[in-house]
Every structure is written in C-alpha cells, then in structure tokens.
Image (cartoon, rainbow, N blue to C red; front, top):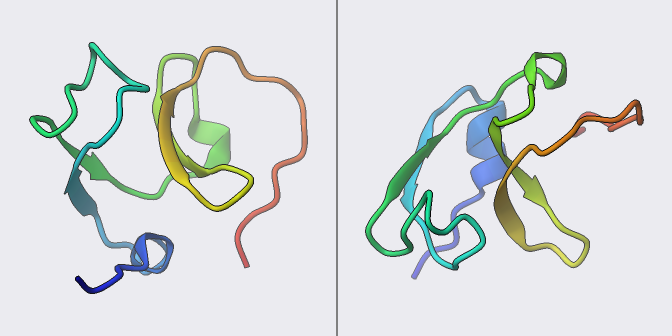
Length: 78
C-alpha cells in the first residue's frame, strides 16, 4: 500500500478524509466505522473541545480532543 504524506496534503490546503483506527477517541469516534475530515487551521483558532491531529514523539499521528490550552510555544511546520 502506498504511504500518503498527510502533512504535505494539509500544507497544500487539501482536506484529508480517513477511517479511524485505535480507541483513543472512543466512544466519540468508533474505529473502523467513523470517517474523519482533517483540515489545516491556525493554532490561534484552537479552543477547548476541538479535535486536533498531532505527531507524537516517535512519529505516530494521533487525534485528540483539546482538554486545556497553556501558554507554550508550538513551532509551525517548515
């Protein structure tokens, strides 16, 4: 199966739709049944309760709901 560069697609302004795997967002999203649409946004537009895609240390992409925001610097992708 061909590897898709999700980050590149998002940087190009595209919307990515995929089926979820894993149970980190269960019961909001049921793996294998739910589709999600992912699009790029500005960091200053994020709020508690939003669902975001991020890359964990080690490289895995993960969807999670924002529980709280703190004043830390998050670098923009290059």
